[in-house]
Length: 460
Image (cartoon, rainbow, N blue to C red; front, side):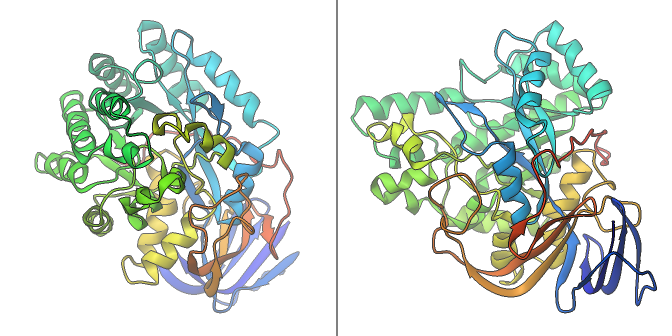
């Protein structure tokens, strides 16, 4: 099918101009003023923004965690992403300790194939590193198009690897062109604080926050940057939340080191006062927790200073019934919240409209940088001739209110219930197919394709 999008304000990470955009089959075929092409479908984008489909590099779909599973699977999660203007997600495969990466891959392929509506890829979480796993890591990079590998510095006994294993993994990735990502918090200190609070009968969601003070993230982030510096491996800190951790990255820059940083809308927009609301605070129980207002200020500045490179979501939704598993003990509340649908609109409304970031910075951190860092550029993440026709037509002035009654995520509450937003995703194309139009999804489960990724576009 061919599509002609006329008179839109096309925005990329580097450019901002009025033009027509012509899509043929699954690619962007022409860009220019008053294009002469005739198309099967024509969209009038006068007064609208036209930008590349978002890439959310941090989601957890149908993920086993704390005795349950995240409530969005590949069908509901990627559909909700499309409604919000995100056309590609990168999910995390979790290796079972004692088992192979290959078996974990097979498990996640069963979760995704035939179900995903939007495009997707995988990170591989390494939870048990040894010589056999090292060989699999190389195979994944060279054969499977899975080039990023997640590690945890917390969740001992389930996901965490020690520093020695982390360094050995970094050496393999450095040699073979892979990228290491990390959940950077000091698990031992957090576990001791959780035990202390439980022993004292302090069991409300507030103590989830108090069990993960800023120092636990700042220390782990600094330790991670030191290991990267020692090995020369490129690295990426997921869901960075606080000034102390960002300062660790700043200090690394003083020795001419580059560390990629991701934050999430919740850390830019919400502070720790949400944990004062009795069990309602369970909606915000995630790890790391939301922080202080000074940390929000630091993160917005980090976006401007190119210290924070990506805004993902860490989308990991649980229903209210699942959250109630921890009604008598904060440590049993499943960690995570629903966010995949609202990332683009929240960041536009709170960032661009309020003058905190430019339109091009918005595109950079939601689409272009994820594509470059994770080896999908220029196939994904930009508006350019030959790129996949993943295109969003966005109404910059439409006001709406976020609510569980109107969102498409498979969860019965919204952390952002009642939040008033300016800017609305209107029409979404996925590889030239109409995905979202007139408030409806026009693609079926199985429409999404797995994206094989190459090495990062950045030279470290």
